[in-house]
Image (cartoon, rainbow, N blue to C red; front, side, top):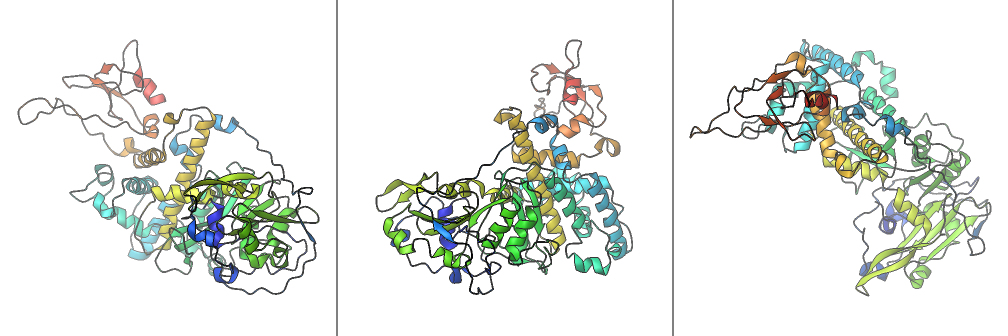
Length: 590
């Protein structure tokens, strides 16, 4: 969703703020009502690099009344350009240095901590008592292991959850930690709030009350993240196809059916704030002097409350209106986005027509600005005409972009306004978060929207934790091969949750006193034990013991190539412990 030329073909973009303009900006029309563009010959013969990415938001309903233009608009000429606003990026590495020794588990716990698991254990037991008459006797440790198993299963990618316990496809790390029936019993009773403690008034006021404690915990972690000056707002779908009044349908999304989540994110995919849509009362707490904002405008106003002055917000045509740009500008926040034609009305007539732009060729652009030089409306022709509105940037400094020309059978360079370049560069943050979540999503077939929301919140917290971890490692100068990939990061968190308090309630499996032999009586090569997670290495009771095997094994401490017969009873890995080398201590303190 990062290339303007494609998403604008189906959703024009505009940016023109009319101060005190009596405009029906709260209306949303379908694509057929908005786009009345004549077919362009060039669009059928040529293709772009990102034709597959189409604007996915199709607003519905509402009619537009006649609007009066109070603020005059002027053409932008070479002598009178719309100047790009200045923003400052403050690079602060102090926080990254403080988190230099953080483990993957510590990053994740900044979103979902011990209190959440404890609350889940209490509410799950109470739920079982209310339904079946007896408690499940689950504990905080078992709830952590439940979610650790769910994370590990999502990384392995079996099509059915039961396959992890089946005889042919059995995964010992999962099957030995928790039985299949126990896992599904916990999942069917998992709760994070006691129903009897919530009054009828609170239930009517908050339709998400069943998952509210978890939403608040994850959102609190997002709000503590560093704010960049350029962010984007878009919709994110929580996949769910069951029965629920909260279910929405957004076409052209990878998961078009589910709960709609409005998200504020950095260009790298780090989620800074979010709000799940639960009906028209979702943003009733937002107070604004402008009653023409509509749903999209209220979403932007709500999510930008934590942004400092001078920030720039990028959004698509679902959100962008003249009233929104004007309202944000009064609060010191710039806005840039694509806009529908019906939302600019008479101002759009001051721009060149579609036929005129088509005649001038690809790369042609035109712009108008208001008399106060605060808002600019730009129209650019690529394969189709594109309209954008901004209080931050206009056409200049104009750059270029590469496009495929079917007529010439080669790539050509065409002119590209600065507003289009900025939009493409900073608009894909929410899509990046969606993409990372989709790689190893916690999949579960369930009829309960609460369980589906729980899984999505854990996925969102994991992805946010990894992005923060990766950025910290890059700031302190780590090499790329020293930084864990998303899969390794998620496996590390899953392993640390599964092995929670393992030393207290389980005994380590004893090692064989001698090397196992094959059918011919020859000693077989011992399988190497995988390295434990960082969380397991630094916690627990670690004691050295002498390995009675015939041959010594290679020390598993990174950087050591010596062989040793000393083995850790908890980690079950060989480590050096001599007068000159103490790999046993180094391994458990790193």
